[in-house]
Length: 83
Image 1 (spheres, rainbow, N blue to C red):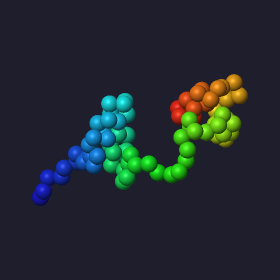
Image 2 (image 1 turned 60 degrees about the vertical axis):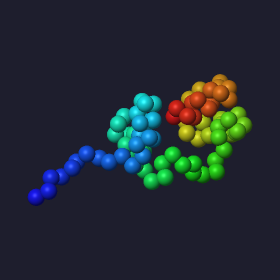
Image 3 (image 1 turned 180 degrees about the vertical axis):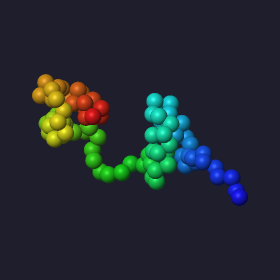
């Protein structure tokens, strides 16, 4: 009977190492690195920096970020990225 190898294989070792270096857990980094097309840009959404403060505010309102009315554009971007 062949011995089973339970060591998971990492598809994108470079991306895995970069994610671990950024502080991701090994498990989460492995899931991301093994995702098909991980790291490739997807949709056509604009970056937060390209959006107006009102657009950022509206998105923050949709997802329920507290204190958004007192935030400037930079703070809204940070809140959206960390949510």
